[in-house]
Image 1: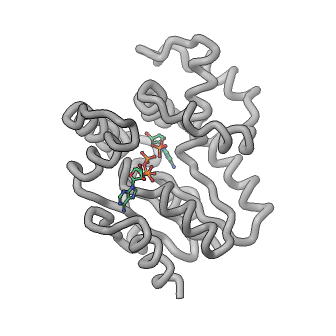
Image 2: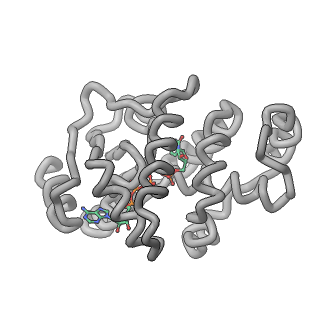
Length: 207
Ligand SMILES: Nc1ncnc2c1ncn2[C@@H]1O[C@H](COP(=O)(O)OP(=O)(O)OP(=O)(O)O)[C@@H](O)[C@H]1O
Ligand SMILES: Nc1ccn([C@H]2C[C@H](O)[C@@H](COP(=O)(O)O)O2)c(=O)n1
């Protein structure tokens, strides 16, 4: 069985997908983390991502030789959650060859597991349009900004709000696989829900 969770930034996708996967004993893939891992690799190789349009060939060469190490990625999540990777990750995710690399890897993992929960931006629309259950998360922008501020231990709520709004806009308006709700996806507004309540609501839908 394939369960997908898509939605805007900081709506709770990864938190809920991870908890639900443990509760119902499913494998879990955080596809955003794969885009972040590629972005980290590019930055590590000192490719300057400001005005990176003329560096696409250089990035492509690097990505062709890159292998995901899921265990290492999952054990070092904080490395990939920096403000810099959040900002450039949105840009890198616009490149179709990067999307192909991530999606090929997702297919590879999926072929090994029977039951899987995958979260991201285009999972229910593009990657697994025939998924058994699709969810689409939304939440109020102020609540999302407060959640991220809390996570980062920051008081700069307005700055964080602008950062999230910019990422939403980029994700929704890119040419390749833009963020949008699949028609058959169940809409979940996490604004007023606790983490536990959200997990329970999803579990109810699966029954
Ligand atoms: N229902 C909730 N109530 C309170 N806090 C929440 C809730 N859901 C998630 N959070 C918190 O909000 C923050 C963002 O959640 P999370 O990283 O799961 O969102 P996301 O949608 O995966 O974001 P992104 O796509 O940017 O990675 C985390 O610190 C998480 O603990
Ligand atoms: N299926 C996906 C997952 C993620 N992205 C992009 C969008 C984000 O800007 C970036 C990092 O994701 P996050 O960790 O914030 O969920 O990756 C995408 O385009 N498609």
